[in-house]
Image (tube, rainbow, N blue to C red; front, side):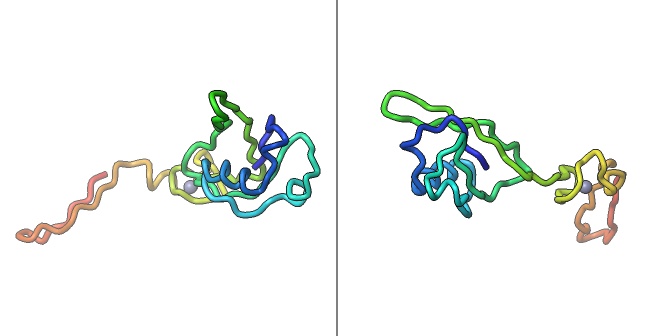
Length: 119
Ligand SMILES: [Zn+2]
């Protein structure tokens, strides 16, 4: 993940990790970011929840001011919201037909012992 528009005083591992925790779980810093090789962005590896939309920005409160560094996520794999798998999109899901119908399996009724499947 890249942080753009970030003032240099925020390029500290602890501060970057705290900001990344606002998104999810920080895992590893980019070598250039750790060495203070200031480019156009700070970069780190973070764990994200692909089932939820990734944010475009975060809000950082600095006294009475707020900063809105832009976020960019690289190498985000396709995530299928149909079968919750990584590696393909919902549009190309092979399981789409199975999940398309309203399939519910109700627990066995104690008295009848019948199992009901609705399509
Ligand atoms: Zn799928």
